[in-house]
Amino acid sequence: MRIYVTSVFVDDQTKALDFYTRVLGFKLKNDVPVGEHRWLTVVSPENPEGTELLLEPGDHPAVQPYKAALLEDGIPATSFQVDDIDSEYARLRSLGVTFTQKPMDAGTVRMAVLDDTCGNLIQLIQMKVD
Amino acid sequence: MNDAELDRIFKALGDPTRRRILDRLRERPKQSLFEICAQLFAEDGMALSRQAITQHLDMLQKAGLVRVVWSGRTKMHSLDPGPLREAVNLWLRNHL
Image 1 (cartoon, rainbow over the protein chains, first blue to last red):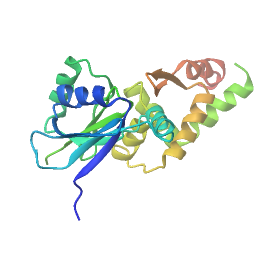
Image 2: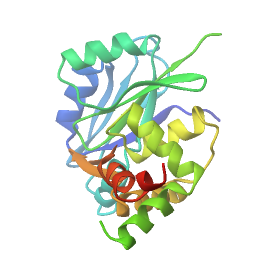
Image 3: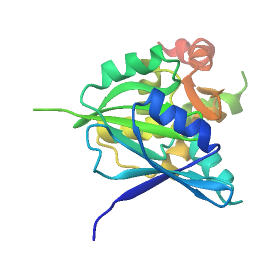
């Protein structure tokens, strides 16, 4: 058994695709119409055959209260790893991305939290090397 | 500031986790609950549940020592030292 896909609930799939590709830098992998929505996944250009991120429609009635509660407490919907969090922070800030948490040391990692403009917070993690 | 307000301040201060939260908020204002939890765990070795930290933040807020502002749809917590200074001037200073 393998984990081939993970997902975030997005308010708007078209807007999400723009943010996750143009801003975060992921690549479109699958875009398949499914009824009124799409099976829409992106991958990291560093690992195009790796785990996909599904940009999942958030129109189920349970999704909005779930997302609002996480957002209120600053809890990320998911987490991505980067090699240099401070340069990513500077790059994303220059593209107008809002961070709820600037890069900070947290034990063995350095982490930051950004707003994906689709109703989620996303954590960035850099593993510290000893 | 009346006795009830002084009570809330000194009670709020009477706990090491709450004092540490104030220390951390002084160093880094505008923190979400998630960030406060992460700092307490990673930097101070305090593994508390989010519910426990929420309760600590409530007490600090009721004492006026922590202020909440919204950043978009996220609640951000900051230290307000005003009530502390007032408590010092009103009562603590008489004994210093």
